[in-house]
Length: 495
Image (tube, rainbow, N blue to C red; front, side):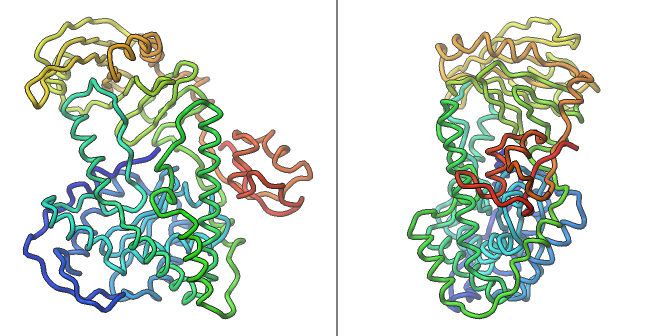
């Protein structure tokens, strides 16, 4: 579930156009900026609240304290030990980490699951600290101000979404969402900034008595996951995903690996343990995959215990569970049903919701029900910004606990819509209150460290809710031989 952080940082602050001159703490050189240190701290604090609202935090004080402790150790060895630092584990299955100006660093439980040691985790955090110490976010904000954007468009490292390509049929709200995502593209760090962050991360690791070569291990682990995702996509006939993890938003070619190796070789000495045992203890019991609070995908079904609802996708369709919507996408990728929660103030009736949210120019309402819930189907047209009209088809349904939802039909063109219509209708008709069977299927998953059995990952997989190859990937051994019996490995269990 890749989240765009549009709400968090796309329009965090309108910055002053005049700027000031500051000395970069890393290079010692003067640079013109629209964001001095005081502004960094202030804007980072504001955006931090939005990040927490967008993602949520892992509710494990022990894990949060552990990660914060490692982060604070690294930050004390950085070029900006004087500013307050905040390190947070976000409740997201994304393989991701990012930083905001002012010392706010985030790492997801998704990326922690694929790390193998404390030193690996420190490598990711050290890289993010490097972005803050070198003022990369402030530099980017200055470039954007110069370009006329006037905003801190998205001070995040790995949380830039690809827009959902080519699906029309949305309204103004979807247009705004797409614009926010597009704004994130402007926010990517430059290649030079990424390489500088790598170099700084290696330096901070060495100063903190971690072997900087662990940064190489991190890149290799994530490249393995990237290859795994591509292999799965090809096997299922889907396009190879891009922008799917922390590595993919960074330079990841041989030159980068070579430079990281050169950086690590500059440091010599005796390093402490990589902290693998401490790390495995810290992530013991950590949620894996989606959480109940975000909704769970299990096979072709989606369950949200908090909302009390479930849906089932047709065979071959893909479920994309995102922060702002649930999207069930046709096999060809050219049509989808998108479910969006309707805010309470959108209207008292289905007709009010359609009128206020869609602002149609004309159309037809059909009242009915879906599995006992009142539903209203609307087919009509909407005005576009250029004065043209656009077709729209949507169903408003009142579900459990009186929550209302929009089920929006999306397609690239009329042919795609006609081809996908049986699947769109079947998905809509699957909307239901969670049954006891659904509740049993919607049990969350967690990480557990166990000794490798004699039967290897194949034996572990017989008792796990994920396949053998996922366990291999989780332990960095996909495509290689299993670790020896008795070695501690990670597995996934149902809670």
